Figure 1: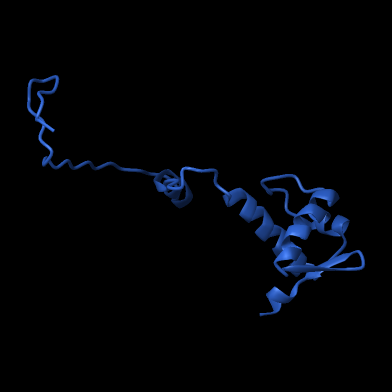
Figure 2 (figure 1 turned 90 degrees about the vertical axis):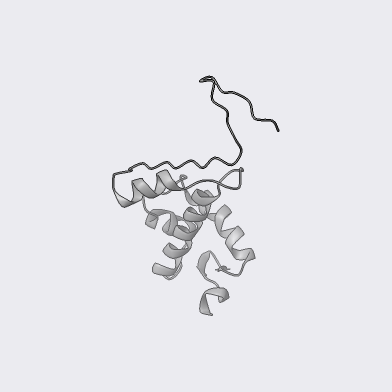
Length: 115
């Protein structure tokens, strides 16, 4: 590629080095969120994974429960709303990975959590 004059009449070359510095202030979380980049170019599953982790942590904390009991114990700051039916839907996914088991009408921590 030939060097071409820019709008100032100066010639750009491919071997020029540029240095940029900036200051980002705020809480740790705010600064990190500004610095993070999504390199996948796709949809982030972070909120989904966070909700599933919270759901699983809740099942472990209460040592199992019915779908309604689990739904009542979930924190309000979940990314998606989880009523009793949504709990069942999510539990069925976790069950495929042996993270929970259904005994009667009670969801309990699964064998993978015993490891």
